[in-house]
Image (cartoon, rainbow, N blue to C red):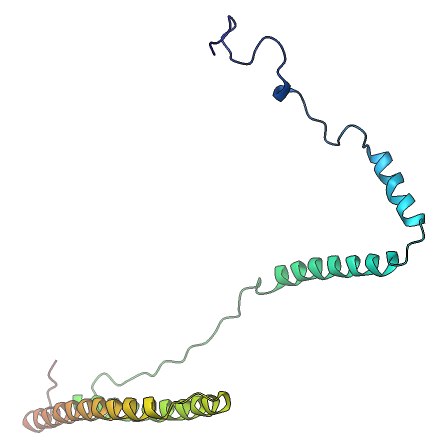
Length: 171
């Protein structure tokens, strides 16, 4: 289809898809819509009031959910104080390694406690965890043994270095 003399495809006579659309369809106007609603409420129907109550309750719940969600977690949290351990700058490598060994033991105890809680939940839900736990605890013990051996060798080196030069600290 070639453009007409004015340069546009749809210029000239009015085409049906180019007509302006009304907001409401032809037979409906706000006045007729309200009169139709009022006539519906005047009719005596057995389920009119329960359905009206249900629709109002559902609408209320939806609006209430949006309001609650909009007001939740909108305020910034108060300043949270994070305490950090401060260490003496002149402490020896041996003291550092001993602290690492103590921290490793604490974290392992916390892990064991958490695993006992999870095993209780697994028992409550009927999940078989004992075979996995046996295999994983054997692996964990091997890993802890290797980590402790590495820390012990580093501790021995650090103590030997401290005995050689007690006044100076190596980087």
